[in-house]
Image (cartoon, rainbow, N blue to C red; front, side, top):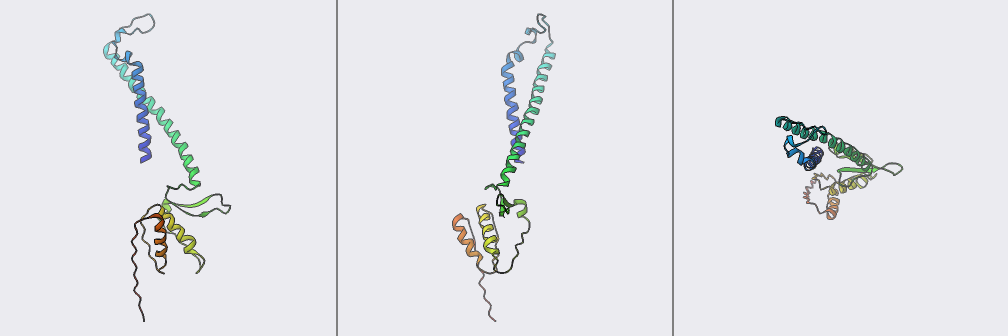
Amino acid sequence: MRLLYNKLFHISITVCLIILFNFLLFSSILISNPNSICLFGAYNVKIDEDIWNFIKTGYFIATLISWSFISYSYFTKKQKSNNNIVKAHNENHIENELSLKIGTTIDGSKEVLIPEKGLYQNILITGTIGTGKTSSAMYPFLEQLLMHNLGMLILDVKGNFHKKVLELNQLYHRKIIVIELNRKIQI
């Protein structure tokens, strides 16, 4: 929506400037009496004032429409080139964009990212005990999400993950509420 607004804003400004430029350039003709203008070389043609107003209105509308199309095509081409630049940047992670880096390609040339849309889905991390699921996935994911200042609900079953949350929060100074439920049941 913002992209459409920006495009319409730029088109409107461009068209307004062109119309203002045209008015300043041709103001003596547009304001003058139609009978004082000599048309067709040496022949002095008398023009009815209604026809003259029709010609001026037609000129204004033609200028408005033609420059709207010209500026629309210019800003559409500019937008397409900007999209190509953004696609190139997406291959190399953009810091302000919400995505989650999960690693790099085998050759290390590109980052592998989960885009924002994918973050609203489920993520499954598997591995046997001690293979580093928490240290190599959960901690880095947590740090990336803290950088974006997102709200999170973290359920810590083992009881040690919240310590890492508090430790990382010292770097990013986010508002964190930790509720510990230390209800030990002895049988």
